[in-house]
Length: 252
Ligand code: 9WO
Image (cartoon, rainbow, N blue to C red; front, side, top):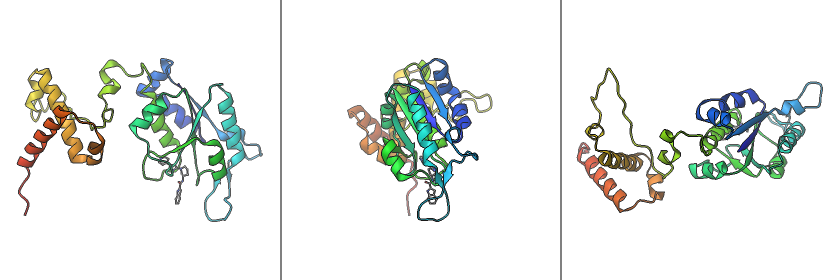
């Protein structure tokens, strides 16, 4: 897939898209990320890209004309129609389910705001979807765009190696990940659940599933309420809850 990112900090976008799994997806030709700078489309001698808001008050907005020209150039760079996303705290929150849908699109254009944001008429005219990555304010949309590029990029067919296949991900089935343990000179096997040392692969798979269910119950009951559990899952969870309750200190 192709992702064009409109940003006053194109280097940040290029550098973050060059790292790790997503960088490798780029090298493998599975993902093409191109950054576009509205400042390159500014027409005045000072290359201005900000403008004062109607109604006054502190703060500036992004100047509409360079942004529009930049978006037009990005769209025209490829004939495939692009789904235009504006990263802002005013959008619905990004979920793994939405990431999967976006990852299946042929083309995205991500708009990164700076200052106090964009003219509302520009958003209404040009933006297909507003997306928030969480309920906090950043100084611009770039970090949110990098999050989206990463989440979508790693799902491109062939981006992940078998070992870290997406089907094993936390959230792919709406549950949190199980805890992991690795070899360590200093700690040895101290504190490692015995089942992981047993070599019994069926028992290990059951334990991991139970830990996923139990941690989701403890930490994210909101996720558990939406997860589809079969009879075996419900039995594993009931067993986890019994064991957990047995080790709770009595409350005064
Ligand atoms: C600035 C501001 C100042 C006072 C009171 C409220 C305020 N909101 C903003 C604001 O939203 N500024 C934005 C900065 C303008 C658009 C780009 N910026 C941004 C994007 N900050 N945070 C995001 C973002 C994007 C996606 N998910 C979470 C946060």
